[in-house]
Amino acid sequence: YSRVAVGMFDKAGVPKGTMRKQKQFDFMAREFRVRVDLVPLVFAKVNASLWDPEEYKAFLQRYGLEPPYTGLVMEKHDEDTHHYPMKWTHKLLTSWVYNTQFNYLERIGPNNFEEFRKRKKPMLYIMVGEQEEAEDQKGFLAHLKETTAKKHWGTVSFVWTLASVAKGDMMQHLRCEYTGKTYAVLEDFVNEYLYCATPSPDGNLTASRLDKLVSGYLENSLSPDKVKSEKIPDPKKNKGPIFKVVSDNLMETVMDMEHDVVLHMYSESDEKWEDHQFELEKYAEAVEDIKTIKVFAMEGLRNERPTEFPDLGYFPCTWIFPMYDKYAPRHFNASAGLKSERLLWWTHFSSSFSLAKDMLPPKPKVFEGIPIGHNGIRPEGVDAAYVEARKAEKAADNHKFQGVFRFEDNTVTEDQLFGNTTERLAAQQKQEEEAAAALGAGEAQQRPPTGGAPGGKEEL
Image (cartoon, rainbow, N blue to C red; front, side, top):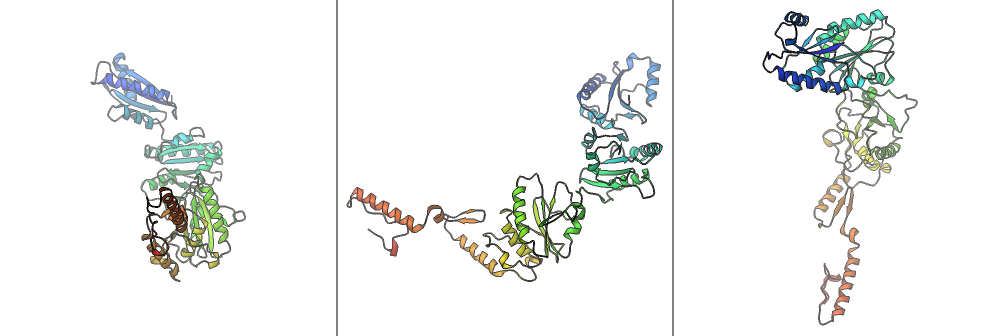
């Protein structure tokens, strides 16, 4: 067997608690039998009291032990014996056996690829190329196993596979260009970054190159040279008004000094994406003829943020990178909805140049309140009349009676809910007159309507 977990016990009771340990070992072995494990693992149990003392001593010496040892060891092919070093509890036992069962260097394939990734440890994938000779492949892997993999075992998972048997989805996940030679990818499951190690043009990948890669990652002195990204779209097929952008060309796109770059980050799985896409297309078509503005969209789940790119928060989100102020992007406040009309007003106040008046829709009820240029002021000035009008409108709102209800941007008054005030008062007055006539002119007086009769005089 390639991996055997051996429990060594002594029914004579040396040391105390041996029976309890044996029961815990049996229970753990039964648990592993019903689990779908990544690698074949055999459990064996040895009782010292049933062995000849000399034979038992020779058996222990095989593992570098001396009597009266009781405990747990794991024997693996071509590796040193692993001894269980911790307190004997079920949780610690199970965890140690699970982690120790993996070799310094494991071979993977499409069937167990995802299972290895579930360990959530940094993982170094080695794709063995087809152009190397079989002896060169064996020598490279053996040297890597005895040096780098053994040194970092337990901290980083080392796995390898032949590129000829790897399925397309596995190659696509690694996202490094395969040239026929062996290459490696270190995946960081915390930040989801990839670090690629490719062979030199005139040589093959070496174990020392991978040792530097792993050491640099663990020392936090390494910058990712590859992040998750879709392929850069073909310029001939990437036509507007909304242009597609991916991680690999995101920085150069937003830093285009000749355009105000509008970037919308989204997820296709978002239930609101279809509505947002419709509004975004309307907006992009409206500004399509403006030479200084370009609209881009990026799928956030398929493209990771480059390390040098600012963290723009959760998506969906919309930002503009003005040509004269690339390091101070403006955010679109979508709390009132992602609408093309609101996007146009936002662009009018946030872009390097104001939009033409005939392009602007009716002014929104709620001002965006987005910073404009440095300290909220754009160099060429702000539409002061519009801002003052909004201040006056807000001040008037504070003095209105309580019968005002707000739904998003629309203001609905009591008149709109219940009809015109004059008509309502007239109908109320008529009903009261009819009621008074029915009771008798001398038995009831008509109550004046709310607000008084026209002319400021009350009717009797």
